Image 1 (cartoon, helix red, strand yellow):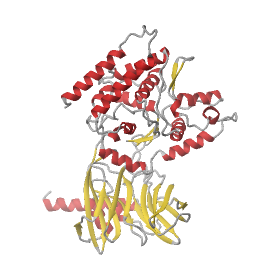
Image 2 (image 1 turned 30 degrees about the vertical axis):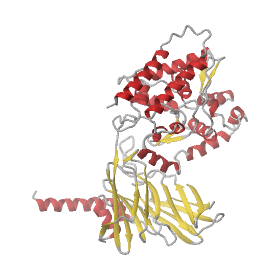
Image 3 (image 1 turned 90 degrees about the vertical axis):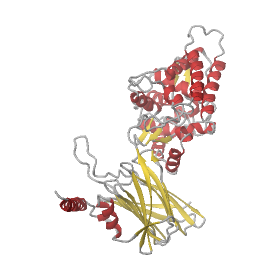
Image 4 (image 1 turned 180 degrees about the vertical axis):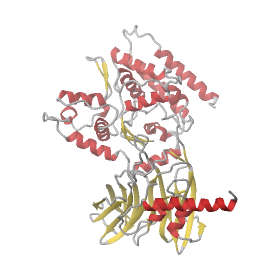
Length: 99
Length: 152
Length: 287
């Protein structure tokens, strides 16, 4: 995942692109078989031990999901974590530096 | 079939479809994924599964930015902002096979201003529900989705 | 559907340009090629300035987004975190990976910011050299296999090089007879009808730009090649200019020419000349 975060006017503005196929479970492959659903279900961000973002996603979200949000508090130079989990239990977590 | 039987069969049909969808849902979740809501295949069920039977009222305290004509239904960028004391913000695409697209659970330090790129399978109403003080507030907009232009 | 004024302007412009495209190739002695080409550029760009009086000339490099507000809004949202970013990162990694013989793309192209040097007419080889062609020639010169021209790794390397060259001026020089012949070849292609639909590039990208053709608004011909390679949502991937040329030709039920064929290289040459004065802004994102 790629995350851009910058502190502005007392909030941290976050934009992120999560590389993920977000397979709906309704597509068929070349042989006509259904490709199983594979999509991110939850995304969250944590800063200084507090959860500052949480959302639930599903198959009606675009491939390589893009999310933009902001949270209060947080200064340039600090870090926070962004993570996601999908319906297969796969997950990714990354530490982001606030610019 | 007479009318009431047809209605009954429709209801049974929807429940079956709903149960089938629920059975294929993820097994590992962190804390809070609205499984049954995401599994619903029609708008009203999706709303009830997500929020129960809360009353819905239209509100102009929700700003929804979405295109009139989506360039590509697979990637429709939208933004939502609200001045309501939101507990959650949910996005529904009425005509999608999975009408509930995404749901933002507002955390204490989170601003009520989010952007996301969603999938829309066909021209449809895009409905945003904001849950605040035990009620649901709604705004919606039709987004046209076209297929097959001359540009290929 | 088209107003009389636009029809008149287009007819006049096309007539002027087609007439000069039909000029016999033989009598070239003592011709001022740069001046001839400059005339074409002025006429071509003036057509669009008249057609879209509210569009800033510099904005044409943004294609249909310079003339359609609803589409532009979506594109601007996408540009907040462009889909080609991941490809540019991958392109950078490819660019910096040495070849088996120890050399690398940097040996051929330095820091990669060379977009404005292409396309150019090579006098010795009597042909137009495009960036993608040069990338593969760098590979073969260093013992590497050629990459496919329409997408994948070559497109990513091109995307990275375009990215680091962003803002460079488009200023193609057509100074010799050979260059002028290649230019005229590309020009003829642009204005010639082809395919089952019997449509020319000019029909869609001059006559019909700004209008709806079924569910699409064709982009203006001015600035069309500035932003390639392009991440098209439809491809869900990066693609080169010649990939788009092929797709476009197939859309009008014409047989596509191979990527980097003389036809497409000369067309790219002509189209880039027509955008002289604008800047390169690749890679781009489009629907």
